[in-house]
Amino acid sequence: MVKPERTGERDMSLSERHRLYGIDCPAVDIDLLLIEYDSATPVALIEYKNEHSFSGNTSWSTWRALETLANNAMLPLFKVTYSSDFSRWCVRPVNYIAQYRIPQPVEMDEPDFVRFLYSLRGREVPPEVWENIRKAKREVVSDAQ
Image 1 (cartoon, one colour):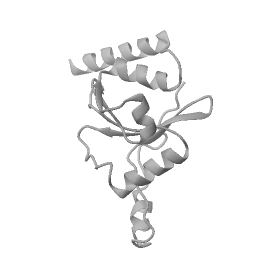
Image 2 (cartoon, one colour; image 1 turned 180 degrees about the vertical axis):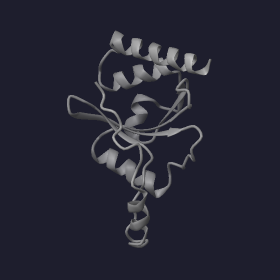
Image 3 (cartoon, rainbow, N blue to C red; image 1 turned 90 degrees about the horizontal axis):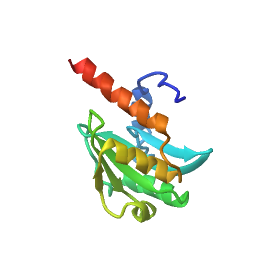
Image 4 (cartoon, rainbow, N blue to C red; image 1 turned 90 degrees about the vertical axis):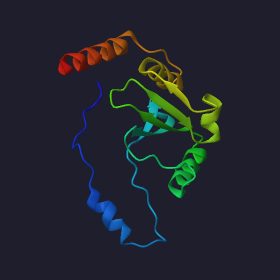
């Protein structure tokens, strides 16, 4: 079972404080960078962004730093933008390793995105995962009524 989010918020004071350390001490405050892994072995780095959030250009120095990190770890790095209702997922490869998996940006529906995540692990999606997704969709529909 997946553990729930503990705090629901980040400590923005650290990000603000770090800015006091000067321009020669850069850091990045990432929205949601997940290490996708299987059996304690990392399989990918994915930066997730909601479609309504600001989308930065992958050539910025922060993205270059993430790309260097992923390349040094021999991991694919993807930028994934998702719709608020989780029906659309745009997967963009950032580094050359990710381009072996997905050569160009591709839009997916949620089932295809879940298959993609499992493919990173060399696995098939278990039936209970599909049932969890169906239940979540039913809950959204009933909440809207």
